Figure 1 (cartoon, chains in turn purple, red):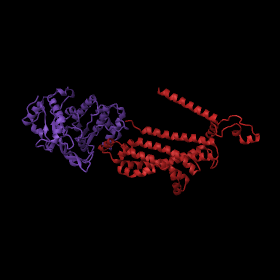
Figure 2 (cartoon, one colour; figure 1 turned 45 degrees about the vertical axis):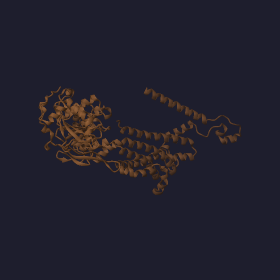
Figure 3 (spheres, chains in turn green, purple; figure 1 turned 120 degrees about the vertical axis):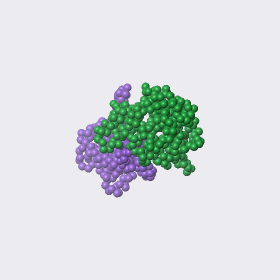
Length: 320
Length: 279
């Protein structure tokens, strides 16, 4: 079991967390919009004027109901779709199209069924290092496969693997190209609870060890709490907005099996579920006074909603 | 269980074959002395008149002919008397040429059309009109323009093998899964490499289905085409033996044509199994 640090050591002055300073914007989503033509010559706006910064080495989860454009945001980050307006800046450069720096783990694993496990990962490796020798490609692929715990299954076909193993191969493929950013579109939603838990552990371990910057979409509140440093809450679509960014108050060194013992866990969980149940709808219809899409409110829930309200208003107390 | 099923099916096949051959033999054998007639007239008319024997050859006669052909399949005694092996070789050669040309045209062109939704839509009416035309309808046009009967037969094979392959290639390429294409995009795979490493393997089973349909049609059409153009080939052989009134040879040819068609189909079925991937 991991040591659960007292929250005092994690707590920072709220003022510091309320605004993200420009220096640590590794990814900066700047005013993007996505519109689709609707019948009658009109346009449907999925979302517009969406701003979101992501720090280097940060794990960000985006939560929202279906239709709020989460997957579209991810596809725009990946470069698979172009935004109707706005830009995404990664590491100081506006993105144009897809890039090997941004690896995607697809919801439906998207393995090439005619290639073996090794073949699938090696395909990515040889795309990254075009001039690499075959032996080097294979060595890198084997290393990535071992990282996700699939050593020994290199020559199996995807059809011979279970759903969890297929998704592991998808993760290995994404990691093998050593991307700057990992983009995950509900990667575990099709898996059973047990497999999902194990894979979450693996992903968390790998990301913490390598300091990987991750943007992940999920429906699962517990998954977001376990994995994320910050959780982005989207209101319902169309015309979805970033309602708020929730700073995860849980210690970085967290243990999935002990999570529910952590102070603040239920406050955070209730906050997220309340959002999904009611506020995602009410906030879409009426945003609070002074809502600034460029700087969505940052929230850091604590033991209770009342405490959280008190803390955001005053100096942070020591919460243990 | 599976093994016993195979065994039982095999045994049943043999029984059906034996019964069919037996029935055939009975049907064509004589019914005994029919009626008294002048011996000279009877000698002139042969067994058909005297013992009621059918003019249709029995399985034993056909067996003897098959044996004769098997013993010497490649003899060549002038333009109208060549061994069945030589005739088959001509037909297979024409099919191979026409079909090979069709593969060379249909697959690359199908690839280009399949990758472009605009071209798919634009060319679809032409393909739909050309597809149902009997390939033999092209024969006069081919003879008129090519002015060579043998080449015309190859052209007819080409044109009949083209459409199923083209349509299947277009369909297979255009229905490559978007997620596989997205994998290639996120890996910054160039268009040529993407075509060979993602689209081709994804479309291969569908393309092979088209190729299998085409080889079947090509083998059907070659017989008819060779009856028209004459000279050589198994189709010409059938027609020639009909003119010779050698029914045993006609039946032998039918069996041989069926056998070769089956082998061609099985070859492509094997190839198809090789490129098919389980999901």
